[in-house]
Image 1 (cartoon, chains in turn blue, green):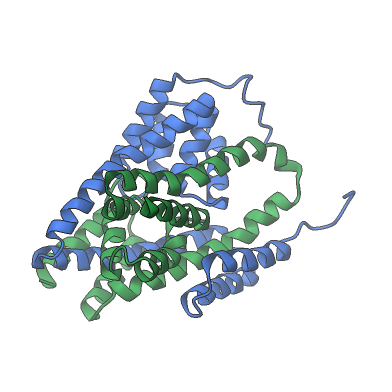
Image 2 (cartoon, chains in turn blue, orange):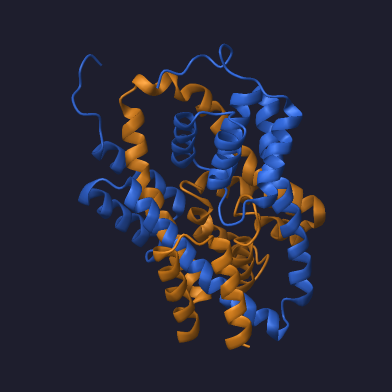
Length: 189
Length: 173
């Protein structure tokens, strides 16, 4: 990646446009934000080139935070600095946030009704499958070799079976896995 | 007021656990919000998470109702800021440095090492939520069917979750 410093050669986009673009994505991205982001930012508006989008996505996935919000920060920063990043994440979060706020109020009042409970059972079962599918897809894309499967298993079992804290597991297994994937040779450290 | 501080502490902490996605934080979210602070029942948490998959945007907006139930609209806003703020700042800083780190050999090691851990956390989260969601052969059947549909087709996940709701209304009522 030969990324130029963000000040030269990089297209700046008016802040209002950044906000409106992310507000639209935030309001329409049903079933996962990434494809919508790519469509809106790369294909439709041409604000980013595809390799850059992929690079941002890879940063987003390596850091804590959701893909949708991390992508908003990175793209917003690239297009409009700090205000761009703030407006992007705000636009991304507002529609879903308001929707879930209302949903929460309705759920508290009507969540106990038989028909609602039945629907929620179905939704929850489908959501479990969705998480499994996401894990499967990520695994196919980003696991290298058998050792990685061992790291996956240790992490999952430590948290799910032995109820170890997520933070401790993340740090301990993460450190081991990073050391396992250490850089090849040590030349001129 | 003490509720607000607790919300900030809990969701600020959960924020940093979401490596690879919001689901990674689910076991801890369950332990803190259900077992430690009794903000809601486990079933309610499973329902909120699942309904959250139907909303557009980031798929963890289900934390907002928790904030609202605990401390009203202010709680909802506080929870959102605490949950999205820390990782937003971290991502912003790393984003600036990322290009400069390209020559650092450990950058790729960190990425490769965190990938299996994040998938493990995702599976652990899946196991936690499954305990509340797979409650009989009917729900198991729905989950298996949905998984198969997602594997073989390119259908939008939100549509499949919605279909789960319809099947539930018809057969689980």
